Amino acid sequence: MDSSDFLSHLTELIVPLAFFAVAVLIVYFVIKARLRLRDLEHAERMHAIEHGVPLPESPTRPKARNPYKWPAIFIAIGLAILIASTFGDGEHWGFGLGMVLVGVALLYAHKLNQQRREAMPAPPVPPPPPPILPPH
Image (tube, rainbow, N blue to C red; front, side, top):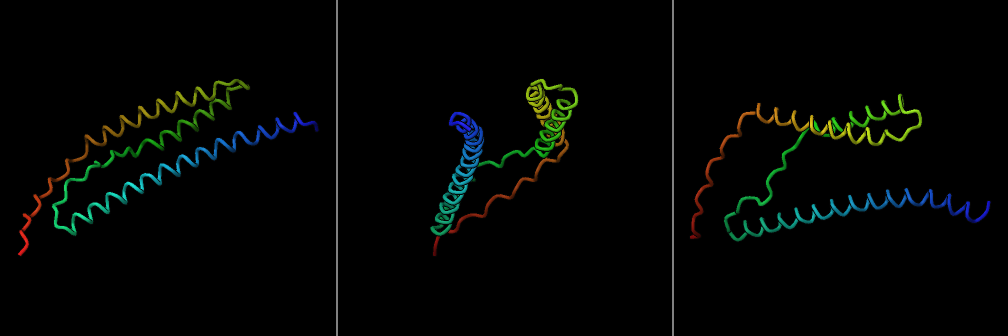
């Protein structure tokens, strides 16, 4: 085995590992930043409660969750793999098919989620907060 053959095998190993490591690090730092922001918001609210300051509305609104998104994505990827392996004959159109099917699945999941939200009753209006009494 000569040095160029060894380097090509080493490159084939290092590039995917580096890509995976970078993806893991990105996820780690995003989660860490979100947790830090949550801790800061919690500390600020606790400080306001301790000093008797009325709490403002939460600056972050709850995210609209789509329960159909991930199942639709996995079904689309599975269909793309099934179709590409059945009819592919070694061609490289499976990735494009996967992207098209994932796009169609996301559009369908969005439509299903809109229908679900329209069918749900409106949430009740919360009562107004009690008045803040001055200290004695």
